Length: 277
Image (cartoon, rainbow, N blue to C red; front, top):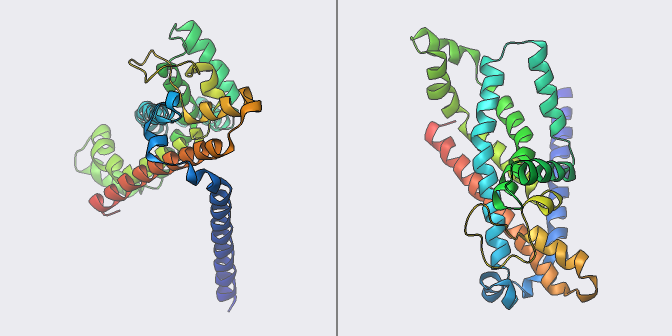
């Protein structure tokens, strides 16, 4: 009787959470609905000099994809080392706590660090590469923590069985553990991308120029993103606000973020089916 009562409470809490999330999504779409009239092929696929947002869309995709490509291997192998190889010592615990603390650092701090270290000290300037490295620094703590948690879900008996068959530690990690946790790794990438999806402060110092003309030709060229473009229109040009265009920009950013995260979720579903996890 008591178990049924607890089950009903949990179901009610889950239902309430789902309802609140659905209402939040509906409210967000309602707020952005004035931008629907602006979302046309000419708006999406024409240059900013013609009233479109092609350069910010492509720049946003470049920034997301590059940051994810950098952080995925670094975050994965860092988590593998922390879980599979690192000795349980004071230094390991200190590094673990540091990773947790980095996840809560404000984005403006990452932006100032990226500007000082990547743009000035390393001489990369305000460029797409500096933006990638700064975004990777922001994504890394979440990526490491996500992969660590999913690695700890692999039963110890799986590792022991592989080692008992003569496999080395690295062979066990490469051929047994990593394939099993691939969906979790992709989930970490999605969570990391969600961390940077609306960031403006970090790329404000490291990656973007409003006077950027066309698309970047090399990784050392600056880039224009949707968040930065929206920021410029709202803050730098407060007397010339075109509300339908602003809502259209915000809705486009929402669509790009949802599309990229959906692609990552589709990859996760593919790996789940492949290894029947």
